[in-house]
Image 1 (cartoon, helix red, strand yellow):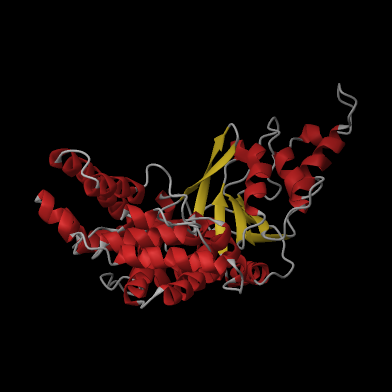
Image 2: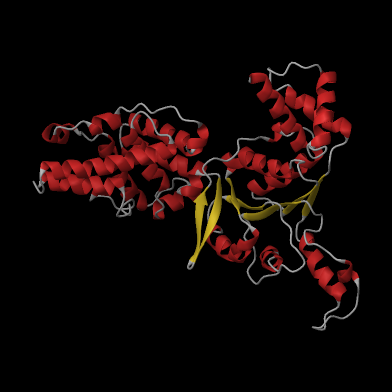
Length: 436
């Protein structure tokens, strides 16, 4: 094994803590008769433990060794994979090295662990290559990564040679990309002294636009803007504003699920992270994806100044915002920033500015969102329609429409008033009580 790993060129940067690197060192020592059997066995079990941890995290099954090798191929960012992400497979000398690496991976896929298992009296490699995972709820692992890795793994198993693997892998790079952006839909960020780190959100809500009852005009406006964006056409930043519980955040999550396969990715950031916006954009501007920077429940008190970072990034800074980045935000306030009557007074302040100028500066933030979409509280009739439509998704709810609306009316009076969220909470209550 270590001789094969040593031949890697483009996929050589595996990290010192990688399982493949660890196993390679163990096999080198075994073949050169360095170390006792007990020591080698302990080191093997350490790497098997890492493999099981990775497999649990991503829900791998059947052949964990193959899944792991595929995971490396799909997540290793190098000159070849990054170019293939943008342009797909093209003629070039780099393909010679890529196919050489894929030849190595083919041999690793077919590697015979029998000799070392017989020599050390172990069966852990046989077990992980014929694995039966315990069934897990989707929220316990990253289902999106799991499905894609296992699908590609099965195709590589059936590939005859490096030529077929080359086609399989480059097709994946072109369709989905490489690295964490290729396999994951959404991210949060962690601020670091030298920049930012992207943290994948493992379990995004599997909601679609059709799951949100009503608001057809609002949804279509969001769809039109997003479709233009993923097609590389001019598109606008979007502000969804209105009453709480009306589906603003749900619409954003649904858009991500609808357009992930077309290259849309989402980065969720919070108000205290706005100072990192420039660093975020610097890392994503040259990737072959369309990024929505998502800001939920956006609002500012009059003493907060983070909105200035946002204004500078959206429009007005020296560096042009890249074409593959848009900002989608939700807010319960139409103007995002709280105004006071003092702002409207044109008296001069201590620093020489007119208060009306201050108000205009605050309101100008909204103008930087080219599309604004209002999600208003539903009427009682619309509320009842939402309730009845949601109830159809739960066969266990057998109330008549009249009974359903009467109980829904009682529910909203004591649970926050009329909204789509209240309707869903009411249906959850009914469905849970019926099942119980």
